[in-house]
Image 1 (cartoon, rainbow, N blue to C red):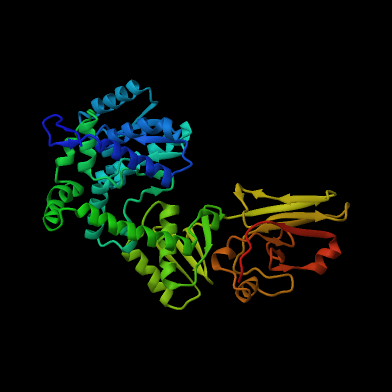
Image 2 (image 1 turned 180 degrees about the vertical axis):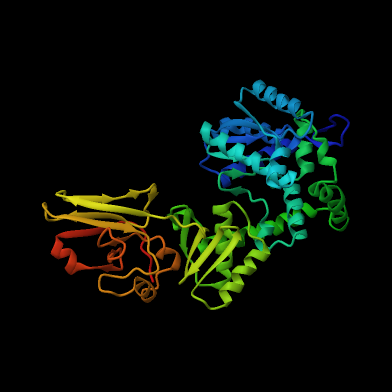
Length: 457
């Protein structure tokens, strides 16, 4: 084997970069085989520059269109120069470059966030927006095995649950991490062999930041016990990724399994109590973009143990969940949409009720058809209120209870009432639940429900 010395560093094998490149190509083929375009998140540091070099080498072989996005957090005086460095790097390769910036410090002060958390939120919003606007199907970040190790340790310190240890996954939605199986040492060696220039962020050595403290103080101690600690934690992560994937399949975590009514989402709870906790946790992360901590999940468990068929749990003010008869509504559990519309016929034969007062009725779309052309008739369509009764005299609340209609749906179902007058108003139609057939036949009106959300009691 031929070897050489570069830049005064240790002896490196000539074929190291080729093996590194092959491993990278295999990752893309395994995890994103149908990928045609990727936006690379490049800061100018060694990790992201190596990722850029790898994609540039592989783009023709893999038939991938690549672009580069760099986000300036405005936290360091040299940040502007680093953006220019990445821009010139891309210009030299003929790769599209998309810069972005924000005052992270001000954003964090306004939203009471840590610098690390606020920077991440703004950076990822920029990346997703840039990818969407420019037609990139995936976003690649340069997280490596050491980042994975540090993230797991940080989450352990904070008392994360078992699936919190899944940490940074190789692929998560549109985000891919093609360097996740490489250590920082391997990446630096590749950069030296390829003679790649990169910038060094001096804040990476500031142990005032939790991640840097773990990197420079805790990890070296762990390496005294196990020099291959990155590999050990990678094995741990792989096992959790597999379990995590199984739980996703068991729960059916997918937006296609959700019904959206207004700004809220509705889904059926799984039967297993442990999986219910994961279902609530994962949908919260999917819909709110926020993880539920231990204390919030304990609220759910405590409320569930009460044995009541219906209950509400607030997570962040008005945002939370309402559970009722095995169904869950996630979203705003305080401010329900108010809906009211008068529907009148004056010789017309058909009225399709789709929208009123700006509130789209996802629950159901009605066709109200007047069979008698010269009959004038009016109806009121609105939300349920406590004292409402059916035309037969029975309380609507009693019907809801008998049919186990979830409490949150009771407030969202558009009911059809007999007249405009509130005092003598009687319910003549509730989708899937009730229809005053004799009365409707007498006045020559037919009401049909099309589509909408139909629950199983």
